[in-house]
Length: 265
Image (cartoon, rainbow, N blue to C red; front, side):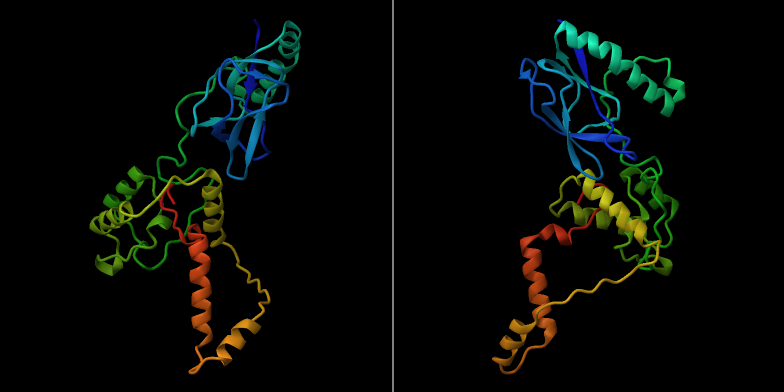
């Protein structure tokens, strides 16, 4: 039976890659045209990849939690002769033309299955591609020694990740001992792999500190607080109510108080 490739589609103008988060079919499953079979996650949203035609899944060439570039072959569908002939005339030339426009050096290469290795979230210097430098705070991360910088590159950390460390070195500099103590501390805390969306939002927030900031205010109904305060003696201060409201909110959604260290939250 002829095979039709399942291609990672263009998911947006600025999207170059996506991570596989769910595979809904297995080889041998019958599928319909435009049926969602794979969920992929970018740094903006989770979207579904659909089948190009009806048929039977021949094989899936990608792995969960791995990242693949746009245009990669995710798998193959056993299709009819008519569908295979139609896609042989339409899809490959179009995909090859788009690849040639973006990467001229690859214009003479055929489309191959997606590579299996995971695309690094950061480059060799520990920074994400396209990221802007983030000024560190004065709590100890303003100067980084070569030894600490090498350890950061090994762990793919940025100066912003170390901003929470209070340095014990000269001039509040972060020493290698400070860094190792910090890493030991967070190793004992519950953590999980950050999603691409969470990482993208965190990067945008980090970059926002290099731009002018604005303040947005919203009205809050304080009548219940005032009524409760009037019924108590002595009257508690407003800060106590705000603290309790914050504690209740964080209890419902503890991830709001989480910290992103590297690619773990």
